[in-house]
Amino acid sequence: MAKVKYDILESTCVPLPLENVDTDQIIPARFLSATSREGFGDNLFRDWRYKKTGEKNNEFILNNSKYGGKVLVAGKNFGSGSSREHAVWAIFDYGFRAVISSFFADIFMNNALNNGLLPIVINDDHLQKLQDLVLKDPSTKVKIDLEKQTLKIIPTGDSVRFEINPYKKECLLKGLDDIDYLLSMKSLITSFEKTKSLEI
Image (tube, rainbow, N blue to C red; front, side, top):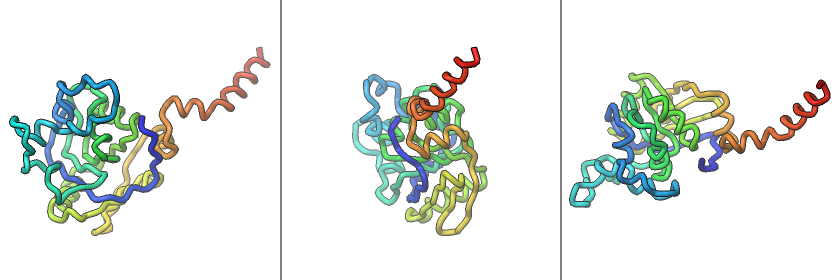
């Protein structure tokens, strides 16, 4: 996992108003042979970003220079399909730090949380309003406050609360993966073990 400490993320957004985007569309299977996590961003949405000739598809949103930022506003049911962790690696390596949708596949959500990418679930109405606003005005910014678990649409002032596993929240806030978290608890674990050994 990339060591990224989350607190408050304020950024413009890239809208991807497509439903049922699966992991093979996020990162096609032919690009899964790399041995490190770096470089996957080059092939994020590869078959949509590029034509079969290798030229950029200027109609695809990621190739539109008007849109940019660290937040991907996706459609419903994002990250379905296979359990490949590479999909999250590609999104993160491209530069996104959060993905907003009204529904994520469970495995994708867990992979995201384990790799420093924050998946935010909001209801369909809020998602549609945000997508419409960003499509109309690419300068639209959102403010994500992980500590408070809120997503604020800055131009309108609208704010919605999102849920997150408390343990994963703590890991993201501190920039820890599962191993780092256990190491941070070393003194408590050692103390517990000593206490138990005295009871035996």
